[in-house]
Image 1 (cartoon, helix red, strand yellow):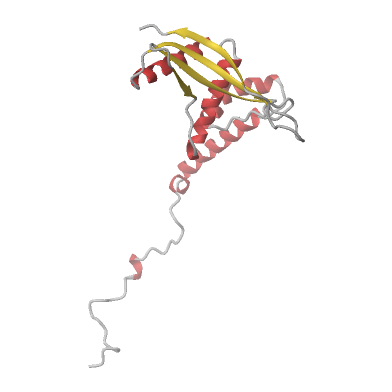
Image 2 (cartoon, one colour):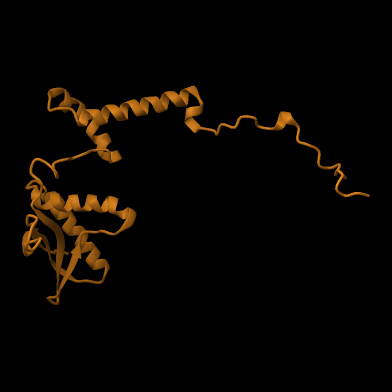
Length: 196
């Protein structure tokens, strides 16, 4: 018997009625009219919120931003261009906490940070640090952050007696010959004894 011409009876060709002839992949919400309507409303509202944030100064912009800004901040779509213009920062600044221990030693805690994907929330920490030292009305934020640092220190086995929040700054020099930066200066902007 010739094996090349033999046909296995159990291997019948598939029934064409059971074959999915729709080669287009499933699109989730976009496949139904209701889903397309939901996606359309979402896109229109998001675009309206973004457009309202870049409108020229006006009463309309202020009114729209009252509604749109919380959504933009929550989604990370808010844009602040003040870092670039009209007066960019002329210095490099970061914040750290110093915890004075009962034995006189000092433990230093920089703002939380990391590399890779964590840089997204690192930026939020850097902005939080900036708000603590630039805003006079941020006394609650300073005290809350100091308590959090004290709790971290105690969890690590420390015996804190004082917490100090410091701003470390150095001036950026203009391009050209010479150093790129000036010397670091340290300024204490919060200090409190640790109670129980």
